[in-house]
Amino acid sequence: MKYWLQYHNYDNLGYLPGGYETGALNLTALDTSEYEPSGITTSKRMICDAVGDVVFFIVGYGGKLKKYLLWSWCIVEEVDERDDGRFDAYGTGRVLNPLPILAETPFDEFKRWNANFSLGFRDISNVPFKSQLLALARQRGQFELASSYSEGLKSIPEEIHRPSRLFEGAIRFVAVNVYERSLEARRRCIEHYGESCFVCGFSFAAVYGSVAEGLIHVHHLRALSEIRGEYEVHPIEDLRPVCANCHAVLHRREPAYSIKEVQAFLGRKKSAKQASKQNARH
Picture 1 (tube, helix red, strand yellow):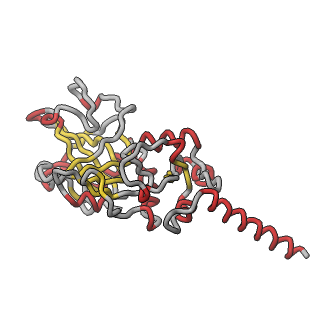
Picture 2 (cartoon, rainbow, N blue to C red):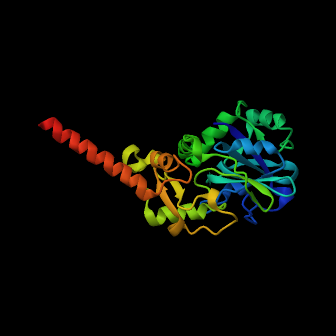
Picture 3 (cartoon, rainbow, N blue to C red):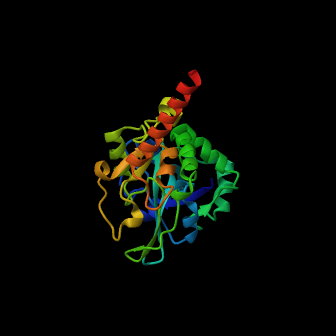
């Protein structure tokens, strides 16, 4: 897993990441508990290599006496190439609350390395200050889930691919749990069906505890590869929560197996195991 940086100049743009507006002069006192993480827009093609990786957002504000805040972390799940040559990326993450201010000598060195953030989106995996960003994210942004989820994204080969079809002239890089840019679709699917696997009933949280709360894949009943145009996803009709194992089996062929077919595989396996135990008793 790599780590990347996206900078947001609040003074120049006039709004916070995600399009939020505020009249607050001191952003460190801002209550961001209801804020959603922002997408990323960049002209750098390297964003296409960041699917499954973590991006840190840093916000600068305050004019000449500029202050810098660690705004959020985000795991990149989808990247779209736009007609103008730029890229839009989307994913799951968390806005930190309260927002930590970045200062002192280590950060000054980091800022100089970034040419005062004029270099834009970039890889910071091997930069020493990354450890401070990680520590702050863990303290204020439930980052442990991010690490687990990112590794899960890269765990099966079907999850990340480069389709040949085009949407409005843009190549789409698709990963699991990505459906038409909508994190709301994932939330509503899980709210309706719960966090247990719809195929086998496995619950990450029940087995691993609170560290795995919310950790579940979401499966399209209608494969994205079968769609010839953009469509509106209906979270309850089109999506189902599934564990990583069942998700891998669902995609063992093209087109994917149905949920009933994989449940049947499990049923036959269970029946064979029970028969073996009975034969052993005799």
